[in-house]
Length: 78
Image (tube, rainbow, N blue to C red; front, side):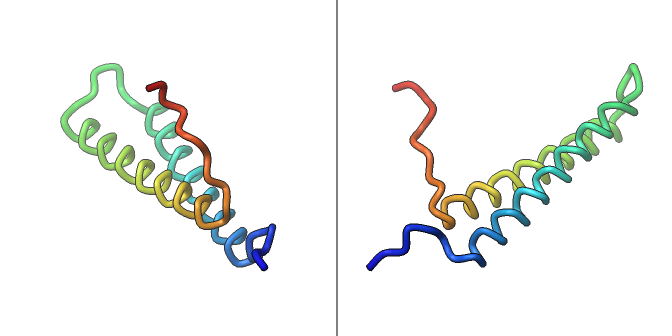
């Protein structure tokens, strides 16, 4: 018989992944709040690194959601 609800450990992993994604998004926001009017090369590099970290955290969150049984149909139109 298949469980209708994901195991508690899968839900906890999803919560942790969501928290990590929230943190990464907040770091992007904090960076954008202190961004100078004319960004320099170091700013561009930092932004790229922050976006990369946020995207990895989003992908990890999505994988954890899939593992917890929260698969969504594609939102892209065909």
